[in-house]
Image (cartoon, rainbow, N blue to C red; front, side):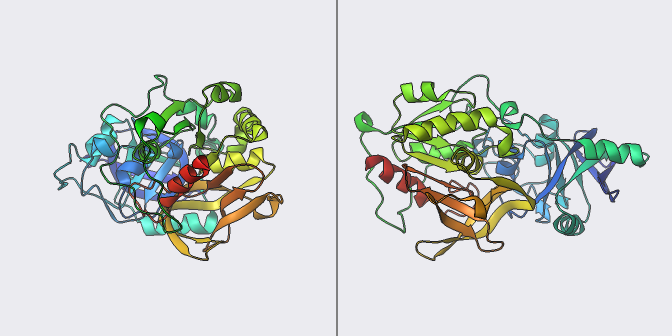
Length: 383
């Protein structure tokens, strides 16, 4: 690991000094934190982190190395990476390279050895802010530099994480070997035979690979389509259901995609399931509003309550925007809410066969409490 000094400079002028990890260089991004104790490989390869400098609040990261089979996409999308302590001697029988080598291979600029607790506290109190990581000589911190950091903005996020090849799972990926757990809210539908396998369109806005795995291990045939696919094209593929994937950025920026989702909803005959960004854009297509959270929800320990059963589930989350509670029309019923801050975590639409959740039921790594939602999606299709 490089012993060169590195500096994190926040837009408010706060400076943290540490050691360089990953490649040597300079990067600017939106500085966020995630509370996951495991799953750093999935975090680094989740397209939803596009444009962001990610801080891991758990103090030791990299202890099981990097395992390509666990990637959520073909590459890393983060703008920078921050850890308290980086493990350079991982121990895991599946490990292929160290985390530092992975960061170098992905051209990611990082920093370790800083007080991540102090950084997280500042982000919680002040809100998410832009930051710059510089490895090497400490730059002159003046108004011009701080303005450059403040001016950074995540743009064309969904378009930027699209795969040009149009393939489904990246090479080397395979569905999980684990079987789907039974649903705590009902019986798990029987896996259909191949000739009757439900055909699901996975509308890719920056989809995590495990969404497709969860559908395929339930016997579904999955067709992945890019973000700019027209509603007419999707309908012509004659799907049994449509999955709106997760993805990065401000949901309201995707005006064209939202208009196409609206056309699907106006048809009103194809079951729709939205996750994270897909949840937000479905809500916008149905007349709701979204807004940016102070510091977002990122990690694997976020409690949500089911409004129907009053049961609380622990969920994996990664988002900086949320659907506004007061904007839900009469045909949009809140199905889950965040126990910590009361924000909308799920919506069921009563006028069309559609529902969505803000959290990640396909969490990998993370809690599997809400994995049953994929079963409920298939139940909706079967009905």
